[in-house]
Structures are given as C-alpha cells and as structure tokens.
View 1 (spheres, rainbow, N blue to C red):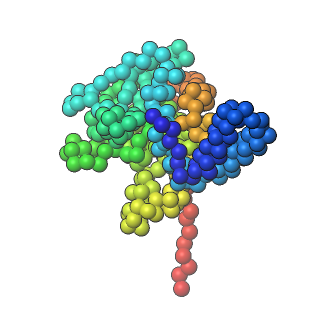
View 2 (spheres, rainbow, N blue to C red; view 1 turned 90 degrees about the vertical axis):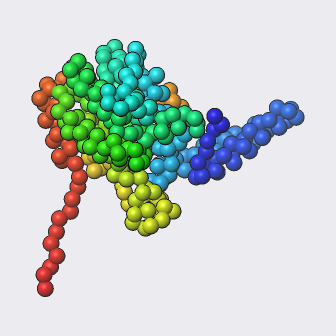
View 3 (cartoon, rainbow, N blue to C red; view 1 turned 120 degrees about the vertical axis):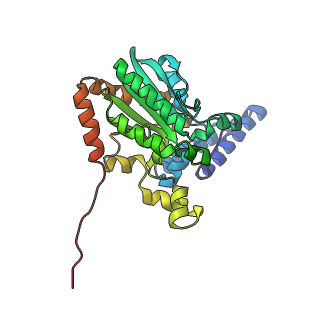
Length: 324
C-alpha cells in the first residue's frame, strides 16, 4: 500500500519531496549540498512539530481513521503469544468485524477481543469496514463469559465507527445485542481493560467497552456519534463535521478531563501509523501496568469498581433561572 497523507499534512509532503529531490541531485551530479539538505531537514522537522502539536479535533479524527494505523490484529501479533481465535456466536454466523480468542500476555492467559478493519477494498468488505453486526457482539459476549468461567482477564480493543446500521442488522436486533453486552459486562468477575485504538463510535464501541479501565490512544476518539452523523442531525449537512468534532469533545485530552478515559497512551510522533512497533510498545507499557493493578482486586471489588466508574461518568452544570 502506498503511503497515505492527510490534507493537513500537505506541507510535510512538499518538504519531503524537495528533500528527496535535493538528495537525489547530490548523488547523481556529485554536488555537495549538505548545508541545503541540513537546512531543509530542520525546516521539515519544525513543520512537523508545528502541525502535530496543534491538531484540531477533526484532524485527530482523521488520524484515528488513517488506513495505515495499526488495527487489533496488528497489536495482537506484537503483544500476545499463542493467540487462538474463536469464531461464531452459536446462533447465526461468524462476524469478521470482531475478532477474539485466548492468548498469553506477559506469560499469563487472557481473553483478547477487538473490532477489526481491512487495509484495502477486499479486506474491508470481508471485515464489513469495521462495522459489527449483532452476531459480532454475541460472539464477543460468548468469549467474555468463557473468560469469566476460566477466571482470566478480558482485554478489548475498540476501533469502529459504530455498529452496522443496515436493515439486516436491525432485523437481528443490534440494539438488544449491545444492551445485553452492557448488562453482562457489568457482571464479569474478572478484570476488564478496554483500549480505544482508533475510532470509538457510539454503541459500536461501548458494546465491548465496559471496562474497569478505559484507555485511549493519543490520536483516537471516543464519542456518542461520529462527527458526520452529528453534523447531519444538527446542521443537516455533513460538511459541518469539523464543527461537530469540536463540539463533541471527543479527543483523548477531553476524555481524560471528563474522567471517561483513565489514561492516554502516547503515540509515536505523527501518529501510530508511522511506527506500528513503537505504538505497540507504548500501549504495552500502559496496558500491562493497569492489568497488574486490577489482578490484585477480588471479583466482588472488580464488579463494584466497574459499576461505580460508569455511574460516575459525566460532568453536569446545574442552575436555576430567575423567575420574574
């Protein structure tokens, strides 16, 4: 796959192109332009620092959707050993938009579950573009209940624009499937850590996101609705998505301030898509620390903490209007 750049990264593209041309010219014509290359390299680094240190919420949404960003299976490959994938919900079929199975994490057994996208058109169709159907959530619940019986922690990776909104999905009761997952995840007696690695959209995200810890990657987002969906409802036009992204307060920093996220996982400079291995290392450091803390809690305390966490979510301002 060719390297993908976003609109706001155009200045970086232009400088990289100039740097490449200057380097090739130096090699071809045996001309010493080392000073020019050094100056252009410094300009490139400064431009990258300026752009990536002042990203808007909409630009972070674009980064969260970057097609080269590491997905669930990429993290499973780098962080887990002995992964055994399970298939099917025992009712209808296997949903390829959600993957999961037993694995070992730092030598100890866990159940890892996550939403999965594709890299190209063929794989995206196979994965339904990361939009899970009801059977995906029923498969996820089946695996979480297996983990509960086996007394092993559950780790979920969230990267979806939302649950699939098609007619067939509604016919198979997508809302009921998500609602059931919410109820049953509160009953799990084992540690549950949910990590938003890309898109965290609506019920599609929360359907596997009821965790004792909710961690968010630096350039991921977590929201009740996608910016485009919000714009279509409030402004009747999807072109207002950047405005909606700002209003939704969906960035990692805002989620931490609102105490929806427990910690932000830093990404390699420019985004996780630039270095999958480095992104996995940074995720591993935070994920392992939280899992170690949760393993010390009793089953009863884990259930109580998870319930209290979600009951306490949200910040409200109350007041009364003067009555004349």
